[in-house]
Image 1: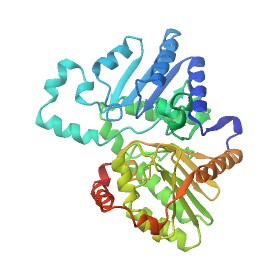
Image 2: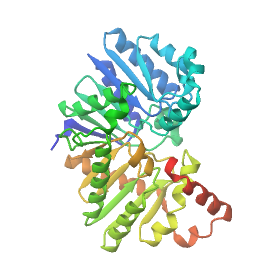
Image 3: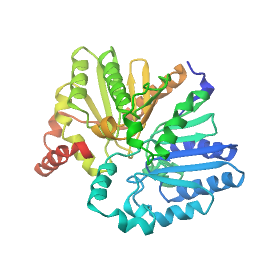
Image 4: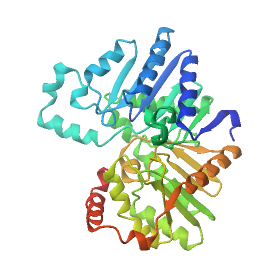
Length: 377
């Protein structure tokens, strides 16, 4: 079990990024960042300034951005970063994120088809590695939307964790694999490998075998729960199997409560989620929608166990995207996360079936349409 100092929970974006930027200032050898979204806003510019200062001290800085998640970035944006002595790459880059001289050679039918295939396989992880000792993990992208100091009452509610020690070696390995995705990345993705390199604390899905292991592990956590299953997730479109497991949990007396966002950043996913509200409520699952702002935390509490990370409970996270989750172990942190869930619950409104059935025909139609395309949302 980790000590308190080796595992620190953040339920506030300002605290998370304040600690992270302080760690960047103290970095001595390497800074490796992989994030789904890196917005060129006030926080993003602050990040670049801190990274540039680290590079001046001789720290090796690598920034890996997801092509689809950072679709607003282009090749020129990346070149400006490289001029600051920072290494930057896109995971499965979009055409406009490639070198201009290669753009037209890329646009042939074979490469276009392959490009669409890669576009659907994304790096959804949010991992910030400082030297060989610190790893910030969770669901916080580099965006001022997480900061109450900037976005005020519109700031997102999110959760992250700082892990210390040599146990984060596997995260350095997975970063390097994603960084070198051109070099037979698919072959590495298919190869057999131990699920978490002997570290059950960190749950990765770098290979098909790891995906199966992670999915089975998720189902087993739910199947063996005896008292409670608390879910906080912004993009909840579970598989049929997962929905059945949750329904069976209710039947055996487990309290199943889910907190979803009332204000979502992606209306398509929101409609797809709402398309299964009725069936979930009928099965006995209590659904609440968080009212103050967008809730982006991905937290699963089952009895005395907690998982937090980047994974959504949808087909994309389970089958397509690269994700990482952390099993929280320290008793004080377990209590802290449970208390945060209850606090979020106080600020949420329960969805009652009688009221829910009164929604408009247009909303019901939109739910059906987007639920049909749930596999790619």
